[in-house]
Image 1: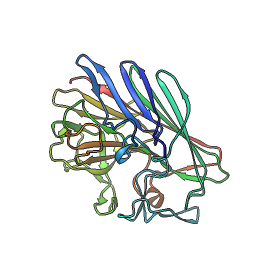
Image 2: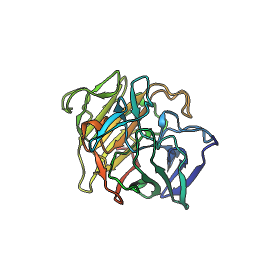
Image 3: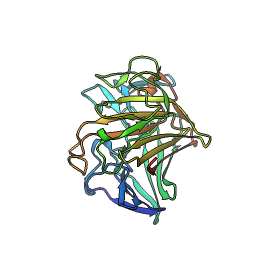
Image 4: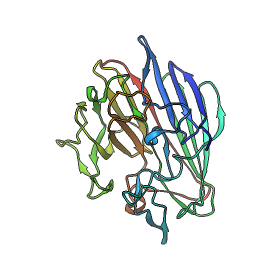
Length: 312
């Protein structure tokens, strides 16, 4: 397998690099008075994304129990791509090489055709467009059913965010989310109904320090602003940070803290934080929660993005 290609874009004081591998966001930084301010974790440019960092997760995000589901009365058995937990995880797009559609100074569009995998007879065409400007990074995803039969569908993305060079244990997190879905820690699958976060250890509706906090939780009941976006903030000790926003199409946010990650570019930074917009929760193909069904010829579109936060 050849090395992935990396495409650079710049605009509005932001600089980004996007990989052909999984259409992954490899670098995002904002020019500040003290120099480039990093908003995402990164990895060496000739390597593929570690821990699915920055990649597109489709045609389902997260996990499918036993790789097994029924759709429209038809039984499907997917390959178990997370065999240690007995799951099919994160779809087919995150490890594939995407095809360049267009590229200019501030915008890159890539595409991928998905279909005819073990247990997956549906044909979809995906696009991912990364664009930088005064408001930061905006990512637009589309999925078009190019087959002859309606298809189940879900999508997520897996950025690891950072507040400059601040270690995660020195940062605070705020999530605009009112509920979380409990997971079985052994398999990462839902084992109860969604529960309110208010007054629990999962409540980040007001900024909270992340020292010692470990999370692997799907959040929902997202608090959407008047512009239709839910916003979540990570800030360092100097008050600066990064904001992840997502449109209404992404009704879920998976929050995951990874241990020290030697594969990421900057050793010694310690733990990493993934904020993952998702259209549906884990095991949605069995639960039926927020599952998208695409009719032949139908296109779904969703947007999310990242922007630098000044000191509060």
